[in-house]
Image (tube, rainbow, N blue to C red; front, top):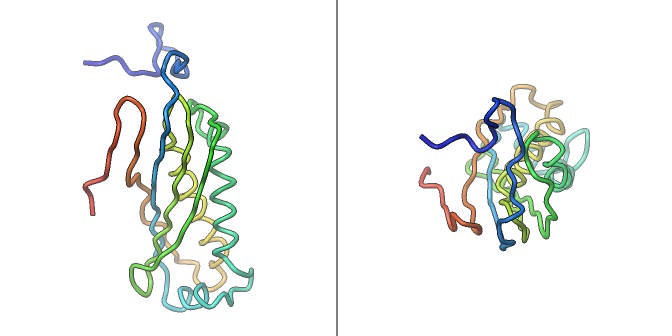
Length: 159
């Protein structure tokens, strides 16, 4: 059994030392799903929510959150992000798909940055839309794909 990467011999925790790893181009894509009432979905689409255009606020929140990942996740490395993008699409009349991608050239990957961006963008959609529907559910957050580094390319096989 392989020793956990963040556990020291004395049982303490440590940030993984990536100083000897090569700098490589790395990307990651993540998604969050947000389910809401038809009324909330229509108000979101029409940009008629009491707080304004939720898509613009959520894009900005996701990008800003990705930049803060190293300060939010205790053992994550702060990374120089080259690009972060947050997009939205509808799976049906009630299910919003929030996708986030992050890119860097670094010694460790950007999976957490993409997942944090998707999560915070989804929570911002909730915050901006809750006046119309307090029962909105953020159903899942997951990694869709990643590339770069020693492990190379990975793509989720889950639908």
